Amino acid sequence: MSIKDLAIYLSSHLNKNGIETVLSGGACVTIYTNNKYMSYDLDFVLLSHVLPKKIKEAMRKVGFREEGKYFKREETSYFVEFLQPPLSVGEEPVKEVWKIKEGSKVLALLSPTDCVKDRLAGFYHWNDRQSLEQAILVYEENPVDLKEVERWSTNEGMINKFELFKENLEKRKSEVKI
Amino acid sequence: MLEPLFKSEIKEKILLYLYTHVESYPSEISRAFKFYINAVQNQLLNLEKGGVLYSKLKGKVRLFGINPRYPFKKELEALLEKTLKFIPEEEKEKYYRPRLRPRRTGKPF
Image (cartoon, rainbow over all chains, first blue to last red):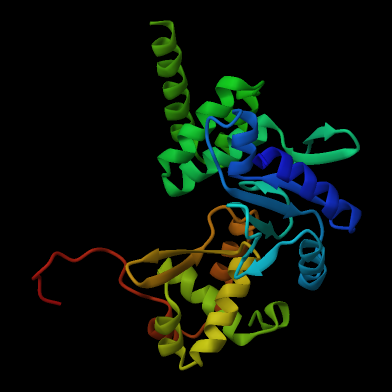
């Protein structure tokens, strides 16, 4: 089962059990880049406070056991984590989420633009180059509002690092042309 | 001072300690305030779970700090900064004024 299929399945199951979530983090990068970057972490942001017992019970129904901060199922290599609300990228709340539908099942996840911001936050605050690379990969394969990313970066006080991101995008474009 | 908000003296002191020390670990915090280490660990883990703190392993030590990606970081830090203004000078000197700038190896203190 791919991470996308698992995310859709879990999201719908959680929703049926009264737990509303939005997928965030590396799993969104995997989905938006068609597995060019492989994540094994499914980070679901809770849209409201949910009792841990309720989450545990819902996850148990689909064979996931709690191991520390994560939920794990024996025959899969994926880890599921639930993050506390609010759904945010950096300092700002997420205003719009994207949805992927498969039959009657629906997965709510960060939009490509918010996914880029989410990855850039990792680069901005932790200096994590892997996060920068992931932001570039998502940008290259999806409709991303660069002006919005620039506005957000300015608000985060990270315009210099945004310029670095843009330089990397330009460099990548010229490499592709060659 | 923030106990009515945080409902815990330990939580308030942990946050002030991390705000002023940038990063720390459970045994250092428990030693500084003479709190039980389990109580400190529980509060740190709860704050991490809520997204307020991050943690990372450095060697064998798990360091905690205020999460730069916490959406209310700026507001929380403003609150902690204001709290510091109300703390007696002696207490501030004892707990919340560490030397953060580097000191070259071999240079006497």
